[in-house]
Image (tube, rainbow, N blue to C red):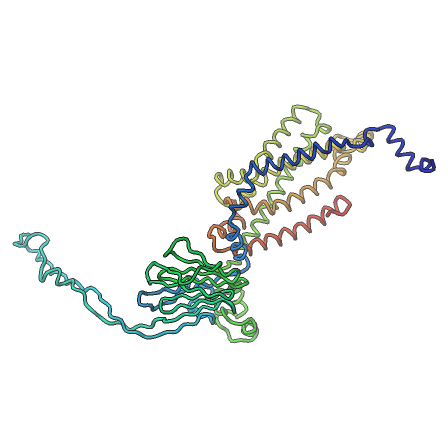
Length: 503
C-alpha cells in the first residue's frame, strides 16, 4: 500500500508490532461497566450525603440577603405606635445618615399635643432621730410624719410634646408604606395591603395576605418582602423599615468627619483651596486622617492586617524552603545512599505535612498566643514537610550523567553537588517555593481566623456580627487583589526560572 511507504506509517506499524495492546480497541463491556460504576458512585454519594434533602431545606432567601448585603446597605427607621395612634420615629444606632437623619424618602406629619400624665409624688424623708440616745418610744420601722399612702398619692401633670400623626415611607415608585390612625397600608407591585395595629402586640390583616407578606400565626408580626428594594416588619406597636441602597455607605468619611455628607466636588474644593477646618493641619491632611481612621471601615487597621498576612506567608515560606533545602539531600536515595537516613528524614517530612496547616495554627496559637508568630510557625511546619518531599523527589529524578561527568574530573563531593546537581534542580526548587508563597497568601487568611493574626481574624470578626457583610466584601476584594498580583509575580518569576511560559 502507498500509505505504508511513508515514514509515519512505518513508525506506526513498528509501534503496533512492539506494543499491540496499545492499539487494541477498548471492549464495549468494559466501557459500560466503567459508566455504570460512575453512576452508582454518584447515586450513593447523593444518598449518603443527603444532597437532595439539603438542597430542599436550604434557606436560599437568607443566602440572597447575605449576598445583597455585600454590595448594599440599609437605612432602618423604626416607627413606634402608641395606643392613641400617635407615633415617634427613631433610627438605628450609628445610622449611616449621621446623628440627625432626615431622609427625603421619609415624610412625616407632625402635631403638637398636650397630654395628662400621672407621676408619683416624692415621698418625704423622715427626720433623722437624735443620736444622743439609743432609746426610743416608737416602734421599730415606724413612719415619722404622715401615712405612707398619703405620701405616695400620684400627682397629675400636663406635658406638651410634638408627635407624628402620619408617616409615609417611599421605597421606590412602586413600593411605599403609610402609617396613620393605627392602620398600616403597604403598596407593592400594584397591590395594596392594609393592617390594623392596636399599639400593643396584635396585628390584624384587613385584606388577604399577598404573596410578598407573611404571618405565621394570627395576631403575630407580619413580614413584608420587597425584593432588592428592602423589607419591613409590622408589629402591634412598631413598624420596622429596612430600605436598601446600592453601594457602601460612608466608605471614605464616617459620620464624625467634617467632610461627611458633602458632595465630592465640595470636598475637593475644600482640600485644594478652602479655609482650614482644623487650624493644626491642612485640609488634605485632615481628609487623609479621616479616611485612615474611618470608624465604620477601619481602613488603616484592615490594610495593616493585610500586610501582616503577606509578611506571614513570605516569612513562613522562606524559612520552610531554607530548612527543606539541606534536608532534601538527606532524603534523596541517589544523593545519600544510607537507607536509615533516607527513611528518617522522609518520615519527618511525612509527619510535618500530614498535619494540616489549620491544625498546626490551632496548636501554635495555644503555645504562643494569638498573633502572627503562630501563623508563621504553622506555615513553616507544614511547608517544610511538603517542600522537603518535592525537593527530594526532584533530586531523585536528575540526570546522573552530569554528576558523573563532574566526578570523572576528580571533583570533591561538595563540588559534585554544586556543579553536577544544583544547576539541574535550583530552577525547580525556586519555582516550587514561589508557588507555595503565592498559595500561602491565601492559606494565611484562613489560619488567621483561628487567632493566628492577619486579615483572617479581622474577616472572621466581621462575619460573626452577621451585619457587617459589606466590610466582609471589602476585605475579600483586597485579598483577591493581593492574590492576583502575587500570582502574576509568581508566574513571571517561574517562567524565567524554568525557561518557558507558565500559565
